[in-house]
Length: 339
Image 1 (cartoon, rainbow, N blue to C red):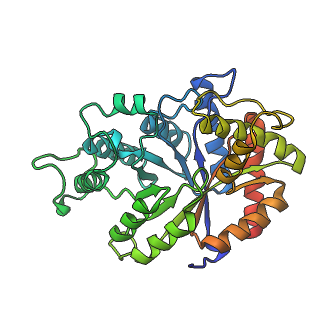
Image 2 (image 1 turned 90 degrees about the horizontal axis):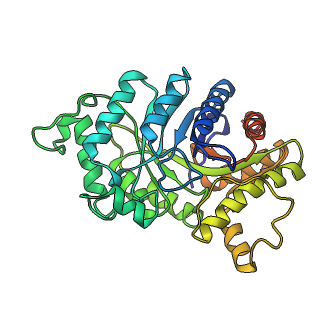
């Protein structure tokens, strides 16, 4: 495990642009921009949005457009994808989209890439019409994409140039929840982000694999890892626990194979799930922190020491928008005290 100086660790926001029960996508986008503006004011380093499809509670399906929406309403914070699911797209289209974003907002755009569909099977088939059905060709797609940004690699399609895109220095991150992307990121000398906020089982082995397979590159001279964490902060432990039931309901629906908008909190999850579902939920959310600033600070210190990550990206699925903004504030205060 590689240790990191707490004062040098970066903290960022992962936003799924949630659509809450009773609201719509338009309201979700307004709230996303307001949260991004607050995150910038509080000193968060990045603001990433995730590609998902066929999910009524997630409005960030057109990820590049929402990135532009956030970047246009902020001035300093880095904005990017956490991530773009590359097998859903032709690499040239992503090179052009992110080349456009980097041209509009120079020095502020990140391109995080995943190989999962970010959707269910029917949506995946609809998205990948004419493309490979799965993510098996992710390394080839990644190589082609990188070739459009850097023609010297010789991996783009012959005779095709990404305009805009070619020659632009857009940081590429590999995202994952297993060893596949960890090893690939290490071999290519790219930064790696692990999705422990919803898939915690392989976190520590994946980080070990990433670091052991790392080869210095023009992008990085040593491994650089980011870890996803769910954080729900409030002024009292009881309020935080109450707010967290919205997130728990959402993950319970995922376990059951259902989709829907983000639901309001409930007084208790008792009676809403079976013992088996309870065990699965607790395992899925074991890299979640729910509580006051003191709880956030103590648990984050433990996770930092366990992972040695250089960055953490925070997801907070909270129904009430004002409570979500307050959670962002309290978390920032706790992390500043930790540093």
